[in-house]
Length: 177
Image (cartoon, rainbow, N blue to C red; front, side, top):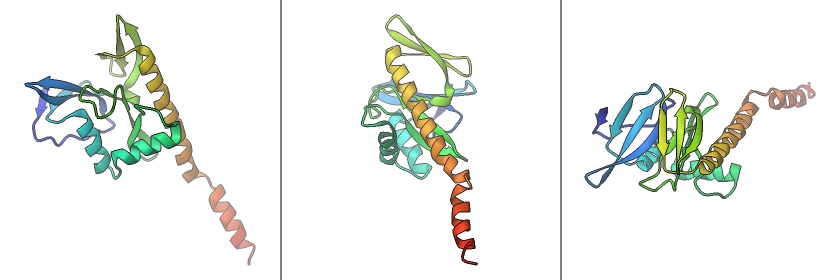
């Protein structure tokens, strides 16, 4: 496992999972990429998420507010970190986002999940399985919220490509000539 000590890691579309790891009473983050590569980053998962939001031009609070506007006032809402040409990078928290024990999953990295003796096994698109201390019901709710957020975001972005806004404006201005 590669170790990143300079704390420069940012979430990207390649990021699959951010898992907290305690080493000598300090919390680090085990990052699993969609390619299957893992690395240890010298900061907490929440700090990585917060700094990634800032780097991509938003803030954690703004991302949280967008999720609340879209989904309602629930706890542990998924957030959009950034987007690339209308393709959102959505992260799903399993606990309170600020909790040192919180695990974050990328929506696009989850292939499936199932309950297994008091834990939940999450199958990633790369074939790896990650075991987390949460119920399948909790993960199912979080996964559903993330998909609703994704759908809402894609609908918003589709307005950019509709000609309806331009043609209405153009028609009203062409009537003057």
